[in-house]
Image 1 (tube, rainbow, N blue to C red):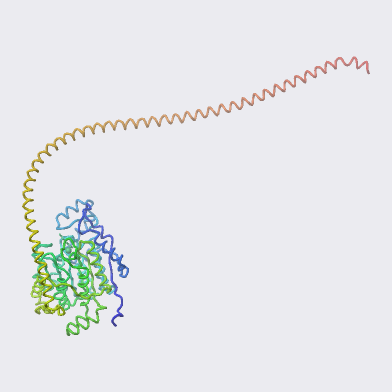
Image 2: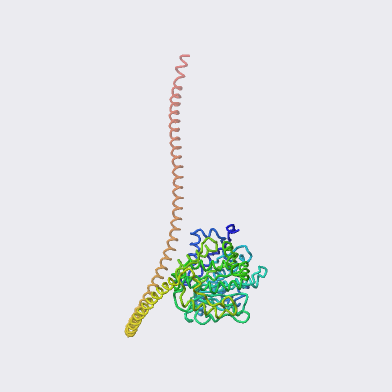
Amino acid sequence: MAGESRKRKVGLLYDERMCKHDTPDGDDHPECPNRIKAIWEMLQRTGLAQRCVVLGGSKAEDKHLQLVHTKEHVNLVKSLSTKKKDSRRNKIASKLDSIYLNGGSSEAAYLAAGSVVEVAEKVAEGELDCGFAIVRPPGHHAEADEAMGFCLFNNVAVAASYLLNQRPDLGVKKILIVDWDVHHGNGTQKMFWKDPRVLVFSVHRHDGGSFYPTGDDGDYDKVGEGAGEGFNINVPWEQGRRCGDEDYIAVWDHILIPVTKEFNPDLIFLSAGFDAAIGDPRGGCFVTPYGYSVMLKKVCVVFSVLIGLAWFFSPELLQYVISQLMEFAQGKIVMALEGGYNLGSVAKSSLACVQVLLEEKQIQDSFEEYPYESTCRVIEAVRKRLCAYWPSLADELPWEAKTPSSPRCIREAKLTILSIRYKKQAESLRASLEVALEEKAALQTKVVELQGEKLRLQDKYAAEAKEAAEQLTQVSSELREAKIDLDFQRELFKKAGEEKKLLEGRVLKLEAELQQEASDKLRLRISRDRYAAEVKEAAEHLAKVRSELRDVQIDLNLHRKLPKKAKKVM
Ligand code: X5A
Ligand code: ZN
């Protein structure tokens, strides 16, 4: 059976309209339209998109948004599109935390939520095996009644709630939401706080509550309430800005994967922010594309009814089933983009994930280094806090057993090298801190100096401003005169134009008259010529008649004389 597995149907959703959400004045912002463009281009260039089922976005329905949001919040986002001016939207945005709005924001928000619903529905129906909704604005910070942290609607929460509440026919009764965005998914946590049908898992930087979204909500003692108690898991990074693949994989191996096996979800949502990626300007973590692919693969593989059953009977059977199912895991997984602000990192990480969804990537799960000591401590704390709800977290952690092939001496040597490196880092950090402190002191004296300078300059500028104002009045009065002049000239020009038109009319009329006269004259000349010819002819005729008359008279005279002689002759 293995190797004969049917090709996985992977949905990819991309819609250019989600790029319309942008800063109102075109200012640069990390949550920019190019984020989803970069992913889409990468997937097309590598030919992966062509092997997926490509979907266009669709807008969420208000009644689905209202499963997790208040009516007021939905109406506010809806109304953004009808506001004519950016200034109205700017006013709304200024009252919110880390939100910008423009004319395209409403449409993009409806598309982002509706698109995750669309992919989730197709995966739940079995039309797709899994899918990736490449959406923006992101969603996991959005709360029932508030947009925040670049998020307008909580896309993943809307889709999860839709499956549970609107589509019982699809048989999705338990949902796991895995949030690996570097920020805590505060919105998602609140929306399913008391809901045991949705297990919310978020791993994020916490830094003692100083990392966005600041406060205690993301701490590991927040496990849900009422029926939902134990169905919220937070893994907070406390040590600052340097977690990488090993730390995330340790969390997967010792928290997420064992809990997922116990919970045995019918469908998994992945709030896939890529801002813990190496190179991200905000996250400061070091997760590689390979690290993301291992994290995704582990979730895909564990997630199967058969595996759940095998786990129930025996770990040996589980191992066997996993090895048999590696190539055709039944996992229904819906990935939705959240954060991630380095375009290259976001595109490469997405590529690695889609390769896993298509089962076109070999994963060995081997890493060069070990998780941080502090990571082990966080994992232990989380396990202790949650083991009452998830018995598989109760065991003492066998850290050594994690790397049985690695002899202890090598491991210790590696750790020593690492600790030396970190000590050096710490020393250089301390040195740079001292330098920075000195610079700060120098800057503070400079600030005092500059403040004096500022006051002096303010006086000077006030005088200059007064002079400029006077000049301005003068110039504006000159301008007014010039304008009056101009109006006068315009009037003259207009009159000249009218006169010109009048004259042109007259000229036309005269021309017509002249033409008439010319043709009359021509006609006269023709008739005169004809008369002359006739007169000449008449004269000639007369001359002829006269000469004939003369001839006749001569004849007559001759005739008169003739009779005497003729009488004689006859
Ligand atoms: C989705 C996401 C980050 C918000 C940071 C605000 N949001 N400073 O990554
Ligand atoms: Zn984020």
